[in-house]
Length: 293
Ligand code: SF4
Image 1 (tube, rainbow, N blue to C red):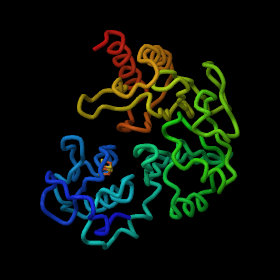
Image 2 (cartoon, rainbow, N blue to C red; image 1 turned 90 degrees about the vertical axis):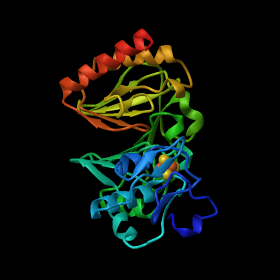
Image 3 (cartoon, helix red, strand yellow; image 1 turned 120 degrees about the vertical axis):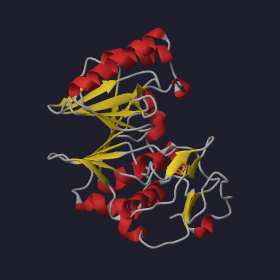
Image 4 (spheres, rainbow, N blue to C red; image 1 turned 45 degrees about the horizontal axis):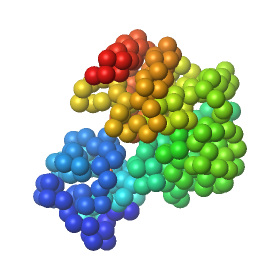
């Protein structure tokens, strides 16, 4: 938890005065700006408090950000309310779909998700291993499968797998990140895992990046695809493409043929559109990647 004890890091000058602030431990992962967009702003390679929380809901969101920050860079000098806000996690996004919070520095603050399923819950990428989430996952039926989109976002997947006896799925080319995983996907062909679940291999960001499509509605995208809130369109990260931008463009073209309504990334903003609007957004992104814009 991020309280006054973390003051060995300096308070950033970009913060407005008040009890909430960001310190120099910030790694600019964007988690706080997504959870509390009215409070936190980007400020030259860091986040900073642009406005102290003014309402109960803003304070709650700011505390959610504090709990989810991977580096304990968010400080609140008034401790009240944090234990209650912890109970919000995992945060409900949709029926049976949750954002885990408690991001890990091992995944640079990557987002992870819990998907409730009648045949056993799935964790998509992994959060920090924290007792609160273990308890809540237990209450919600445990974790049967952990789908790992790529090597960067595994965080504490092994600890969750051991705790719940969960099966981990990762691409064979990402094996070094989770050598004891129970199932390795080979090659580049799509895998229809079951009637509801399709695994799509999308080389680009890394050689073995994969996305998970559930019921033609939820697409868990790792670092392949996200929403750009400034431009109001889907995006891919050419600055953080570790394998091949050309291959990522080809993977995006194949993905544009799929139907989905939600993009649930590891990094970058989540988005929910109608299937038609999502299809248009995908085609716009493909065109932009083709043109090199
Ligand atoms: S969540 Fe923490 S590390 Fe990430 S941008 Fe905010 S303050 Fe920085």
